Image 1 (cartoon, helix red, strand yellow):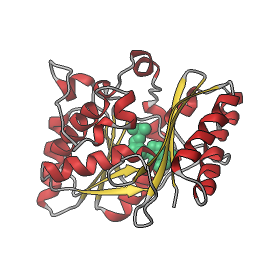
Image 2 (cartoon, protein in one colour; image 1 turned 180 degrees about the vertical axis):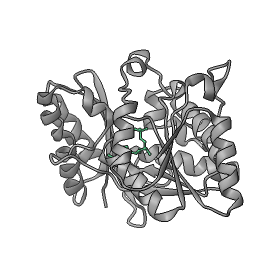
Image 3 (cartoon, protein in one colour; image 1 turned 120 degrees about the vertical axis):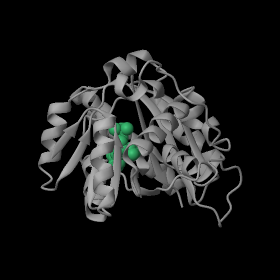
Image 4 (cartoon, helix red, strand yellow; image 1 turned 135 degrees about the vertical axis):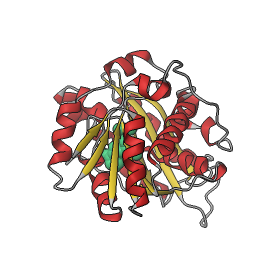
Length: 282
Ligand code: AMP
């Protein structure tokens, strides 16, 4: 395994590999790696000659300074975890300066309105930051495939839209959600939870599963109300949103259409830490 910290050095290394017709898979992460990340890396290693894992806590996608400051940064442990995979990986762990040079700012993107819903509505500027870093990483790495988790389903749809609109030569691969034994979706932010809260946070996925069951016989509006009531009763949580939306457009489900695929999306605070999750509803 090799670790690069400078984009110019990485790019020239990769361009010599590209000349040998090697395929490159990219797994963008913000580090504090867990099994969910490792599953993306493993899939990329199977499907490509070379896998590049970027580890970069991207400041422009944070709308909350405390969240950015407290985001876990564990590069040495991350490197060790990648080493256990038994496959040769390139890690790109740049500084903010290497990525942004003198100006830390994001480009503005139009994702056909996908950016105005859910995460975009509650984290202003978040998806401009995501688009900015993803586009920069694609330019530096030149991957033929890039791997994104369904845990951040809205991000996945946004990245697909970005690729389409800018005609970028990369295929986006969606990867399933990895969960802890309790059902809690794995997340780097789980590391910040107390062990008690981590146990309690299993309620999030339990409620999503319950919502899915209810959706078989009830309307989206009724199910949403039940979920909201359930969280009101649990004082340790603050529900930011629960929405049942069309997977493609992310438009809220008003009337069920059996030809459409719906997902439940949730963002909830516990211990002042914001967690998100999603579930297929039908
Ligand atoms: P992050 O480091 O949180 O920005 O995540 C990097 C990538 O890993 C994103 O594409 C995430 O969607 C994906 N990811 C994060 N958590 C999980 C998980 N529990 N299961 C699968 N993929 C995940």
